[in-house]
Image (cartoon, rainbow, N blue to C red; front, side, top):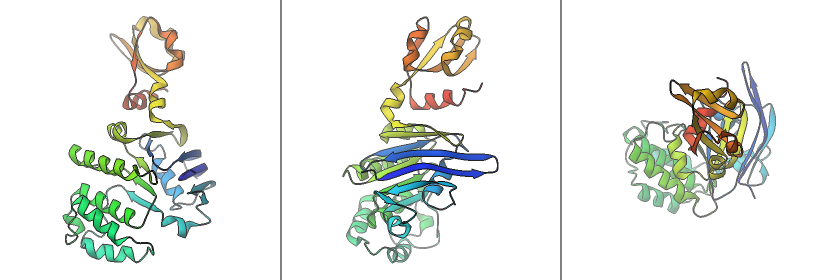
Length: 281
């Protein structure tokens, strides 16, 4: 059973349309959610959680209609939007005292285990924790009320490479039991290369792809060639850039035989995103 299933999610603003977005996440997986600024990632997440009114669409969490069972199902969701920076003047233990009252299934032993695992000093104020430690604290709160679905919107932005790597290790550890799943929105593509199993790519409010990460990369190839060949190749290029020496671009792997006179190479996720956003050039 899918842990999260989004069907036809639609939200219209003046000048922007989130258009019929659908994808699903199974337990035991990390899904990277990507797209350039303004593509609709945060709008999608807010609509999933009913933080903004949707115009159309359905969301199911653990097989249940989220909008009909919102109070119950929100207890199964841990959500962090950006850097955790609320109640900065409060001590960790006092904020936890408030949070645990909202969750009848609060697991105190599990919470204490997270504090120890992440080396969080509950006597410190939120403002005294590093950015990475604040995210780990937010994760501790989520895991301590038995949240199965974890949704993070840019959790690693602003973290140094070591802190980001430590957090990704935590993500992998969390889903290793096969019961938890993570939807992870980020602009730091290298983080997704390290930890994501699946990828959902949104562009200008529309779903471009939602699939296995390896399959997504393998379905595309990087290509480079002489400028003299560019005009004939343009119909098969997803996106390209040209310079005085020739052109570089992105193609679908199924079209590789049309580029026999060019050089091709495997495509990484960052290159795919860069050239995909170049397609209207």
